[in-house]
Each structure stands twice: as C-alpha cells, then as structure tokens.
Amino acid sequence: MKDETKPKTASTVLFRFTGEDRPGLTASLSDLLSRFDCQIIDVNQAVIHRSLLLGILARIPAEHDEDRVVHKLRRRGRKLGLKCKTRRISDSDYDAWVGREGKARFILTLLSRAVTAVQFSAVTALLADQDLNIDVITRLSGRPDRTVNDEPTRACVEFSVRGEPLDAVALKAGLLDLSSRLDLDLAWQRDDAYRRNRRVVAFDMDSTLLQAEVIDELAVEAGVGEEVSAITEAAMRGELDFDQSLRRRVASLKGLPESVLPKVAARLELTEGAERLLANLHHFGYRTAILSGGFTYFGRYLQDKLGIHHVHANQLEIIDGKLTGNVLGEIINAEAKARLLEELATSEGISRKQTIAIGDGANDLPMLARAGLGIAFHAKPVVRKSAEHEMSTMGLDAVLYLLGVRDRDLTVA
Image 1 (cartoon, rainbow, N blue to C red):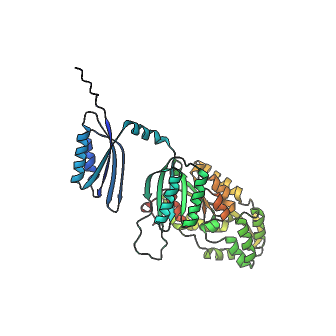
Image 2: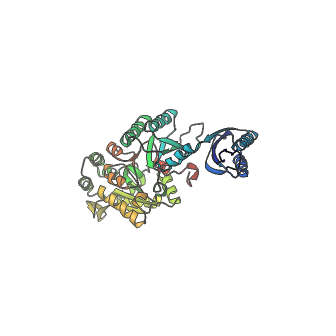
Image 3: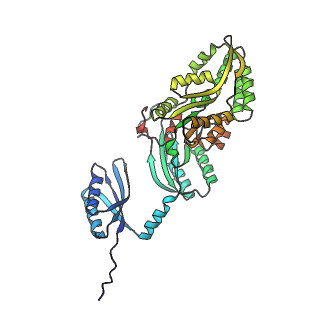
C-alpha cells in the first residue's frame, strides 16, 4: 500500500513574548531558534518601563517538527519569566502579508507640550477612519519629569503608518482641525528616502528665527511704529503687494541714523528653540540659510551668532551714516525666496526634495511649497491653511522631531 502522507513543508510561526525585561532574553530565545536552523522572517521588540514586548516571525524548516520547536520555545520562555503566545501563519496569510509590502508608508508626527490620552485617541481614530494601519509607534522625546518646573516642555510621538488615505483632502482637514482644537501639532510626511536625507534648511528671519519684525523695531526708533506695524501685518497676511509695501515702509525710515541698527539688533530676541535647533542641525551636517524679506545687517548678525551658512536679504541704502529710505538691488520677495531655495539646492548638489523651508508669512508660501518639507511656523491663518505642514504649539527645535531625531541623539540638549 502506497504511503499517501504529504511531504512535510516548512512552517511559519509567530511567537509573542511578554514579561519583565533584562539583558540576555532575546539572545537566549534566538539561540534556541538557531539550534533548529530557523529563519527569522520578521522581528519587533519594544521595552516600556522595563516591560518587554517581543515578536518573532520564524520559518521552521521541514526537517524539524513544528510542535516540538514551539514547545521548546514556550518552555524556554517560562524559564526566562516570559509569557509566550504562538500563532501558525498559513501560506495564504503569509503571501497576503508579503503582498502588502509595496503599500505606501507615511510618518505622522504628534507634537505637544505633553501628550494627553485625548490627543492620542483623536489622532489614532482619525487614522482608523482613513483605513490606515499603524505599524510602529515611537516616542522621540525624552522621559518627562514627574514634577513640573518653569522650563518649556516638549513631547513627541511618531506613528509609522501604512496604506493610502481614503480621502487625502479630508485627512489634511482633520489634522488641521485636531491641531486647532487640541493644542498640538501634526505633521504628515511620506516615508521615503528624501525624508531621511534632508540636507539644507532655509529660514525666514522675522517672526521665525526672531520673535519680532525688525522693520517694526526700526520704525519705533523713527517714530512711525504704529503706521509701519499695520502695513507689515497686512503684508504678512498677503493683503498687500510685498514689494510696494516694503518700499513704503523703508521710505518712512529716511534719515534714521545708522547707529540705530546695532542698538535694535542687541534687543532682538531669538524664537524659542532657535539656538538648540541650529546647533544640532550643524552638528548633524545640515547646511543652513536665511532667506528673508528683512535686512542683511540683521541677517549677518544672526549668521555670526548662530553659524548660519548663507544669508539672502534686502540691503538698506546708507549714505553719510543715515538711512536714505531706499533698498538697494533686487527685493527678496516671495518669488525670490523660492528661486533662492532652488539655487541653494543646486549649489549644494542636492535635490530640491532634500530641502526644508520654515516661515510664517504669505511671502514664504512659494518657498514652503517648493521645499521637500515646508513648515509654516506660528504662521498667519492664510499661511497655516495653505502650507502642507504647520507648527504652532512648540518652539523651533521641534523641527528636529519631524526629521526623526530623538532627544537622546542631540548634541545640545
């Protein structure tokens, strides 16, 4: 009589271990798998407050009995103080899993002063409504102290997401809605090679690197502060032609002594996190630039202070120690900023998609749109609505989280 028993084939088993973490657990379990010549198909390990969660998807060769291997792994787990759950993965389920490999991947970054359960629940529900699967959740910020002090806090959680949203427009609207309602920032980026290889960061200066609009500070010294401030505000909202509004404001500074410039520079305050961001960007090898509708004197001042590599801004005309009320050369307006960003990418030998641009005003929008990662920072409503990414609750150093940098990786804490 013929033996009609089917020949044995390799089997795929998912092992899930949980328990108190300590050194050597993964080594011991993988050592046992190695004795059966198993192949490690996938593995994921996380530790939360000394609690281990370890998943191993293993292929058990046909010459080894699956039940025996599973039994020995469970027993080894018990000896190590770990609970073990197992599930056999059918060939059809495995093939379906492999078939999902080509799906689009995105990174959603949640930024807040402190991540609350309300925020977390709302964000994960939005992803579920868009039929998006969360593969990995990672905390990028450091462990918070139990006690609160006067230092500004930072919290960041990064979601690695798989799949295409059902409605990309609705997803963006949902992210904006959550940001405005729940006091958090959300950044949605395609997880591709460009995201992991940004190389140039371009900053607007006034109300981005600096807390103030420099021209308004100069206008105070000239005795026309309120008039100029109103024009600046309208220009930043996109209500006025930038070139005309700049010439009008600069004209009101005619006769202002050149000696006022260092006086104003000395009282300018950097935006929260600016020094920390620039120091770490330079440590990681990024090239940095100021692309500003402000003035070169103050751009050079920040260049010396922060080590910025490139400065492009407007040149005030000064004759006999006084401002003439004129601007020399090309005005750095919205179109010029976008063009200069592309020229920077070319000069640095990189793709435009490897650039980051950060600004707050309507004259920054073309630059933000042209960059691989454009960030509207504490921006005017029209800019927040139009920009692909916006940050309104954190300091500038939170940009590091959008690059996937963890607090523990920073050279300047």
